[in-house]
Length: 156
Image (cartoon, rainbow, N blue to C red; front, side):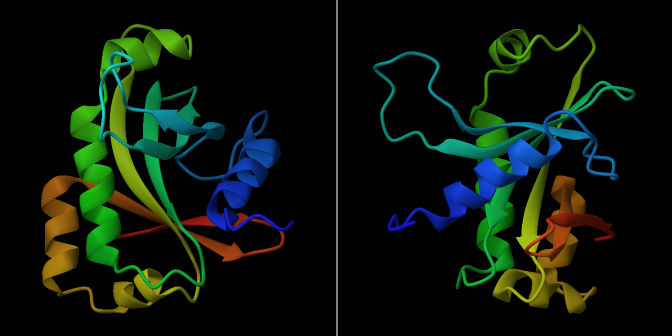
């Protein structure tokens, strides 16, 4: 409770809620949090992916960048973070680590709390950020209820 790691606690709560059941979206289940991007221990300056989701039916893994409601970070930053992380991740190691079947596809998305600065920027569908999201194939999901963690897909 006294930790300043609020985003990580949200991530843990999401994993607890959705590890065994689907989010009700194309994300499927949220199976882990804080996934390191290091390929070897000596790698430095490499971050962690906030969340990893897996959709069993579609054999789709999704890397998620989570931004909490009170985050002052922009949508552009979230999009660029997850896109960059998706380029760093070593897919074969990721899929093997989480026992994902051959043929699993990887995609990237941002997960935002409704009312956050980044989520509010979604209202301008013609913005350059939205165009960039479409070009980079970055998806968006919104947590519409902070207490119940209800998740909805957003069309970019």
